Length: 335
Ligand SMILES: [Zn+2]
View 1 (cartoon, rainbow, N blue to C red):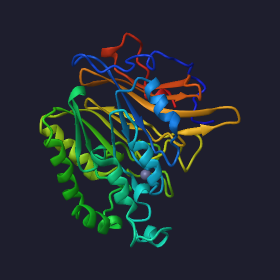
View 2 (cartoon, rainbow, N blue to C red):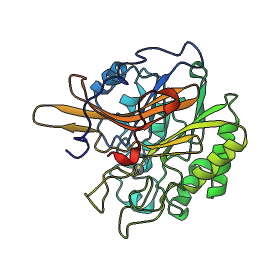
View 3 (cartoon, rainbow, N blue to C red):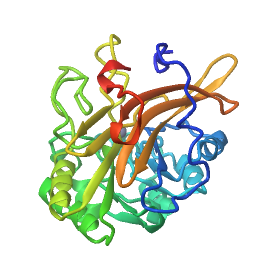
C-alpha cells in the first residue's frame, strides 16, 4: 500500500494530546483535522476516529462524491465543530456542458448542488466565513467547486448563475470580503484546490500531473485573496485544500509534495486518496492533523488509523522547533 510509509515507526504522542479539550487560553494547542477528498469514502467510524483523536475542529476540502447528497448528509451530521468547501466533483453534473450532458438525474426537477449547500448550511464556507471565537480563529472559504487552474471560461456560466461572479478578479474580491467581515485576526483559509504559487513541477503541491505534466494548477484568485487578507493585518497560519491527489498520475516513483511552509503560513494539501483503504483483514483511514498553538502551526502530519482506532502510521510533514524540543524533520525527507 503506497500511502503507508514503511520508514516511519508508529508514534502516538500527537494523537494522544488535546483529547476533547478546548483551549483554556490563547496559548493552548488545538487540534485540527483536515479531511482530504472523500470520493464517497466516509462511514460511521470517521466520527469515532475524530473523537478518538481529540479533534477540536474539522476542515473538509470537498469532493465528497459526484454530487453525492447522502455522503454530504452524513458529514453534515458530524457533531464536531467543522467547516467545508465543496469541490468540482460536488458539481460534477452541473458546472460544465460536458457534465450536464452526462447527468443521471432530471435537472429540471432537482438541484443536487443546492441540496448539498442546504445540508451544510453555515458550515459551507465557500465564498464565506465561519467564526470560531472559542478557538480564536475564523475559517474563510475560497471559491467553491474549483477545478483548479488559470482558465476561467470552462465554468463561467456556473459561477455567474450561482454567485454572480464573472472573473477571477471578482472571485478574489468576494473571498477578501469574507475575510474582512470577521473581527477575529487569525484566518485559516479552506479551499478545494490550493492557491497558485506553490510550484510548477508536476509533483509540486498543486502541480499539473497529467499530460503533458508540469505547470502550476493552483487557483490564482485564491492566491490573490490570501495576499490581500495579509494586507488587512490578518494572520494566516494555515491554508488547507485538496483536489490534487498525492498519488501522481504520471509516475509511481514518488508522491506529490503535500506541504509548503513559507511566510509564516503552512500550505497543506490533504488529498491522500483513497482516504479509506480496506484490506482482507482491516480497514485503514487517514486524516491530516494540524496542531495550532498561539496562532501558529506547531506540527502537521498525516495519520492512518486502523479499524480498532489504533494509530498505525504517522508521517510528520512539518514541525515548528519553537514549539518542540524534538529535532525538525523536513517534509522533503519523507513521503
Ligand atoms: Zn477535485
